[in-house]
Amino acid sequence: MYEHIKEQDEKIYDALMGEEGREAEGLELIPSENYVSRAVREANGSILTNKYSEGYPGKRYYGGQQFTDVVESLAIERAKELFGAKFANVQPLGGANANIAMYFALLEPGDTVLGMDLSHGGHLTHGHPVTYITKIFNFVRYKMKDVETGEIDYDDMMRVAREQKPKIILAGFSAYPRELDYAKFVSIARDVGALAVMDIAHIAGLIAGGAARNPFDYGFDIMTTTTHKTLRGPRGGMILVRESEDIAKKIDKTVFPGLQGGPHMNNIAAKAVAFGEALHPSFKTYAAQIIKNAKSMERVFKDAGVRLVAGGTDNHLLLADVWQSLGVSGQEAETVLDSVGITLNKNMIADDPRKPMDPSGIRFGTPAITTRGLREAECARVAELMIAALHGRGDEAKLTAIKSEIQALCNKFPIPETFI
Ligand code: DSN
Image (tube, rainbow, N blue to C red; front, side):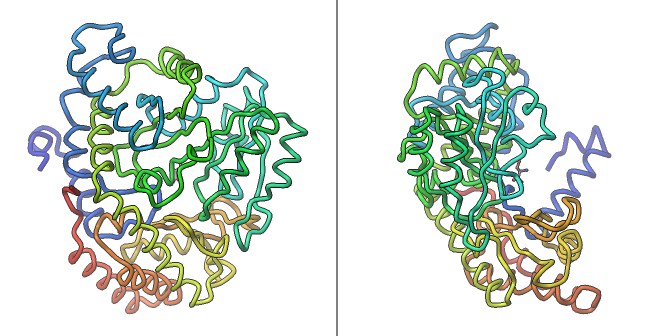
């Protein structure tokens, strides 16, 4: 593996081999990460990295596009089929870029967006003041009404929408474990003449695999996403338009030439390969298993008396209030679990009394371990080991025993190379 790098650049080779070992020997519970197939990695590392292709299939600014056009057209067609979209733009380099392009395509400076508050599970690019996009557009927020059930405060959302007249009602999240009431979002958007947009980055694979509802079926106008989370593709972004050609044209113009230059055609080829995998019937089984596995972890945490934000999960992720329930901060929990071979991230919980760099919670999920082949029984055991490690922090013998059991699980469930 990596034989040319090995010969040419020892330092990078060593880092790559280190990461190979880290991924193989530990359990990945960061809910936004996954393992791609060899085929996706080959496409991502392919010869297409050499090519400039500004423009879109059939309308490029440079010559030599006979193969890039094939690749991008396939990525677009597969994306449309996966999500029931009439239009797809597969060029955004990431989820943030997709969201920024969506805002610039649909809004004028000063226009308002109503999105979920980051502290209640939203995302930085949905209008957090640290992002530059808030210097251009006005962001107002909605929250959960009940943190114990995860119910969104739709009445307040309607009140704010009528008062602030947003042009976009934005659904979507990076740390929210429940399914949204899409019909309510759309009815509020229609009431105030806004577009209904959903950032499906976290649950794109669940939607594509039929394990979660598709916002387009409820009348959402646009969806933005990353391609590397539950969708199990290469790192990147995408924008989908349900119906409107006018909106699709604006989005295409905004992505290029508005915001980006040459698309990364190697990455687009990898997206196309991943979308092909997601269209395969086996992806439905995968998507359903992600949720079953998350529910299995939920049961163990609940039985152990650990408080879960929103009371549990309907999707691939869980947020546990380890500070209140176990007296361990999010940072300490992340460090202890890392030491036994479990990777996850500390996370603010709703209305967190602690600070972002050492919050009350941890966020974890099942997309990557499901790819690895773990099922409900093994996921329940992983959850038990997590709780045991947090209780046993400071007890070196106990942590060593837990680490050995995690390693044994990793050996039993090696990272697969193909999925179809
Ligand atoms: N970093 C991503 C996540 O972990 O959810 C969101 O941008």
